[in-house]
Length: 242
Image (cartoon, rainbow, N blue to C red; front, side, top):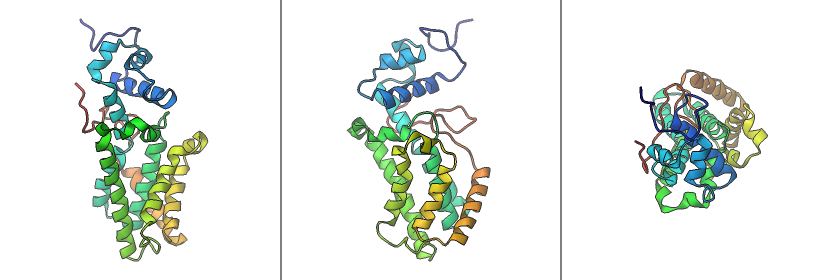
């Protein structure tokens, strides 16, 4: 029987998805050596593939970066749709959004969120990423403004309040590795976001409990990889894999 997939320079050490192995190797190289300094040949060698074989999965280096960037947003954007159907209430819904967004940004062995800080991420071919990031920011704004209109967020009516909350979320991108690895950080950031908006402690604790309950029954996700258990790669508007 002929072997499945493309030939490798060295034998595979696992039966993992080649696309996921490529993404993991590229994430490591992009975060350590930098995007421009990382060649497709280096990525292929890190995975044990020939360079030509790598192009079977990703046609160019930009497609790999696009996939990694997309994974910093996709779980939170997908969550916004589910939160819209959950009827959790503004406080618990915002708690869940912040906690899960931070969890995604802190998960995995590599700081994928830091990829948006690369100068190359601001090139025109990644304009879709910044548009999608703005969609997420807009959702934060709507959630906070709706809560302020309902009298739940005393400080939510301040024009800069949503930007402060979103800035708090993304602050974990530049946090130290021990902070990012602390499993209590996502919930602590979510608590801090509600406190920043003036939510009283009693209601904050209730939102925390309800948020945890929701997350325990919601679809889990991971940053470097698709939703756990389905084995599928997350796509983005700028590339398609074959």
